[in-house]
Each structure stands twice: as C-alpha cells, then as structure tokens.
Image 1 (cartoon, rainbow, N blue to C red):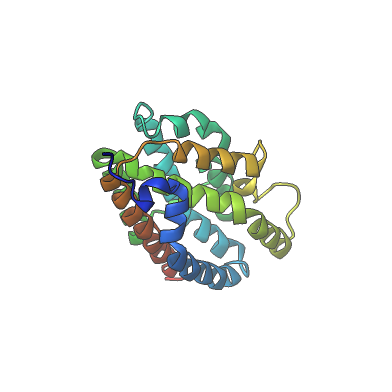
Image 2 (cartoon, rainbow, N blue to C red; image 1 turned 120 degrees about the vertical axis):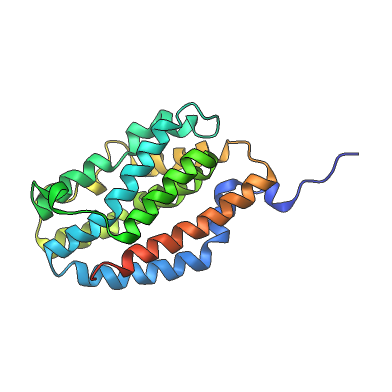
Length: 216
C-alpha cells in the first residue's frame, strides 16, 4: 500500500516557500519601506542601498552559472539571460556613485556574510539556491515597478537612466511565471524541502541585516 503524500509534498514548492515566509516577508517589507523613505532623499544614499544588493545578485548569478549542470538548477540557468540583474545594477551604480564605484566601495560585513553563505550553498547544497532565485527575483519582478516610480519621481530621472535594475527586455509577469514554473517543476524530496524552507527564512533575515546597515 502506498504511503500518502504529506501536505508539503503535494504543495507547490514556491507556494510552500511563500507560506513559510509570510511573517518574515511582512517584517521585511516594513523595513524596506522605512529605509526607502530615507534612501530616496539622496542619490548617493540610494546608490549605497543598491550597492548592498549588487553583491548578492552578482553572486547568485555567478553561482547559478557554476551549477548550470545541476538537475535542479538547469531550468533556471536556461532562462538566466531573461532576468539576470548584475550588469543592470552596475550601470545604476555608475550613475549614482560614479564610474569608479567598484574601486571606491567594498561590501559591508552583512553583504560579505550574505555572499559567503551563497557560496557555501553553491558548494554544499546547490538545490537551496532555488530559494534565493524565488524570493529575490520574483520580488524584484513583482514590486520593482512601484519602487521604480518612486525613484524616478524622487530624482526626476529621464528614460531608463538610473533605473536599469528595473528594466527587463521581456514581459515581467511572463518572466516571473516562468521562474516559478521552473522551480516548481523540480523534484525535491521531503528532507531537501525542509532545508529549502529553512534557507528561505534565512534569506529574509540576511536581507534585513543588509538593510539595517544602510546608514551605518
């Protein structure tokens, strides 16, 4: 007689990640809103906010390329050109912090720890990268346009200058849906699912640590 599947085994992986992090997501949103109000008063401060996350997105994309042959990550790697953000961050950072931003600035301790964790996941348990790509990229694709409008209005920007991180060549909803579908199509056992849920909570904690360092 077959053993009945558990609730988590029958739920879509992205749906479970969303449910597990609901409280953390609310806390993070409140912190983002508070920090954004301050960051949008000054171009350099906003640039520093972008810089915090540049290191994270750049490492995620590097790690995905390193894991392109992993069964769980192959699907995401195939569509990486549609949503990769590191180059877009770099263009915006040059606008806000100057062309020499990469030599003048270095990661905060929180950003360095975040990057270190992504590298650990890549080497030790690459399937956990699914959580990073779900939470970080779908958030940017879903809520990024609201932030884009705020940034454009606050700094009176024209065209896409200073807004590259929010610009995608394909339809944002379509990209977001494809990312979710690729993640949900991965076969993940119960043990690995639990690790992915734990990593999801860790991601929100690391994001909050980044934001709390913004004005330090």
